[in-house]
Image 1 (cartoon, helix red, strand yellow):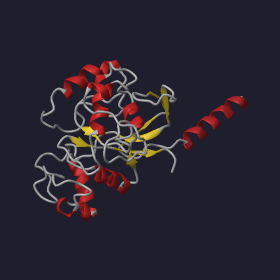
Image 2 (cartoon, helix red, strand yellow):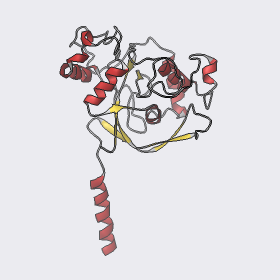
Image 3 (tube, helix red, strand yellow):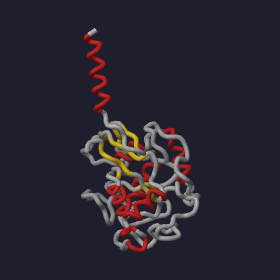
Image 4 (tube, one colour):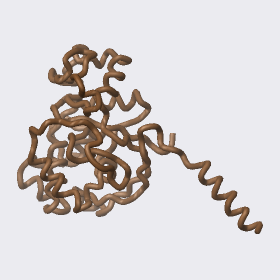
Length: 249
């Protein structure tokens, strides 16, 4: 009887000590991610610690709130060193988002802007490993959908929550937008990079794929190649982001 009572006390203590995800986020439990690119002395699997992730990409409505409270990130106020002239190009005005697109993902934002937004929210951008792990990209069941979406580069951008959540409870990791990550150019380095990695590959061609752990993972190669083509101030009409957060303060 005493042992039973002790068990429940310990169970309740564990529940009380668990940190609930912040509003709008879910917990991605720790696990291993099979590296797509790796150095000769790197292990095949990278360990990913538990972290919180936004369930959805950041929307126009979310970003408008940020811009109003941080006017230095209004379209006309941002220097081109932090975002090219097409920053927020779909917005009709500095504080006006497109009609009926409040719940569409914000796009045409730079890495600097995305990073600042997450910082404003007390969060951060995801790393490449975290994004790939949380997207369940290594699940073969997703491959056909991903490649089919990559084959429609000019498709109309829709609202968030387009389908079912993945196994982590996260939506829209594939099939809606490309997403910025903190270390976007950490694998194939060219030009402006946030990493101290010194490798450089020829992008968007077969030679770039030769460094991949599995050359059959073409969809993954496309993501890595796209990220590595970016510079921090670049914006495109289908590139947005979502934030992550450490489990520990």
